Image (cartoon, rainbow, N blue to C red; front, side):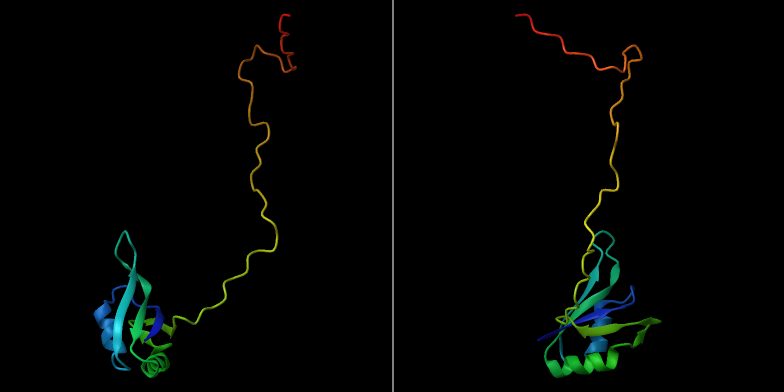
Length: 121
């Protein structure tokens, strides 16, 4: 079984339509279009499990860069991991540092520090 990753699927396309297209190039075992949890609308990408590698290669060669409903699709092996972008090399800096966060509200108090009263002995 070979897993393919498809990007650029038209948002109104159903899994059965994608199945019909990929069946032309080999036996398809499973089709999954990823949808939004809240709306149920397609996110425009999905996965297809092909039964064998020759069928998957034929599908990639024929459909990678093809156009479906004015959208260009990209088809590649799902296991073909691309390296993740490197994190920034600069250390994280806080963007907000509050100063003088607390202010006296009572206008009758002075700004001078008041000494704490001593405890009686």
